[in-house]
Length: 392
Image 1 (tube, rainbow, N blue to C red):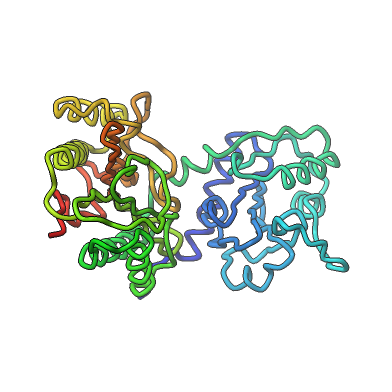
Image 2: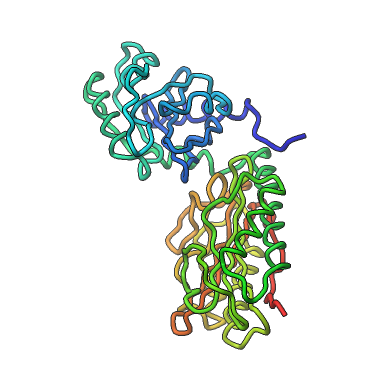
């Protein structure tokens, strides 16, 4: 049987959201998504925009609608778990074709169809930091027909619902991590000096698709040698050399759910500087996974992370961290940071995100794995080769 999210669960998500909307006194909620950040749309209907962007408009009572651009009708009907689909010019691709003669809806017509003559006082936007000004302006203009409507940021309303995962979600995440581990294993088995970063990435991509993944969970990177002290980067055609420390960051996507793994690798025998920073990162990750459990305040995890690295003499190498939520995106709400103040709950899912940068020696590492919070402890989604990895 295929591992997936059933239709009933998508419907339950909308019902939970409508309950939260009522508590927040929202009349409407617009969930916005695009090709690279689809989570707010995909969560409610499994639609993943391509070229165009998309939205899910949810009334506090009644049927939700998927909002798409003019070209995505046949594609959306094939994938969407919401059958009420509306085409809007505002969601067209960024080159802005005109589509003369096309029969299209507007925010105005969709909202009127949803709520009739009822008054709209407050509308929330989930994906507030993502939505384009063109779409925001079109929405704002249409809302003038409904009086003085307040527009508020509603990312947190949706993110809190998503934070605790169901068993179906956990199964999708486990499969995404299985695929991701296969990709990491393939890279390490085939990695050799003389290859480029992009060639190594190609090994991972072939494995991801062969194992049933949808593709990369994010533009992952393989950084080699000097200048690996980049917390975020991209693969290039830089050549791997003997003695290099390589920062490998790879993620696979399955049924919308993202996995992520980070491993430092040395071509040849690790020198003292390389071994020291890798062992510090491994110790920090182990301490986090050994001590995390439901009921803890998140900032306690950050303290554990910092204290471990301080004992190792690497506290000045910390950029951020040590964990972020993970699910439909590699990094999603909530983050675990030094100023965090929330209780960990069973079935929350995080990724250890242990980044250590050594600017003096121009090297950096990331050790990253996903895990689930349990009543007592954690369930790791990936644990392949948590060690000083040397390619001899």
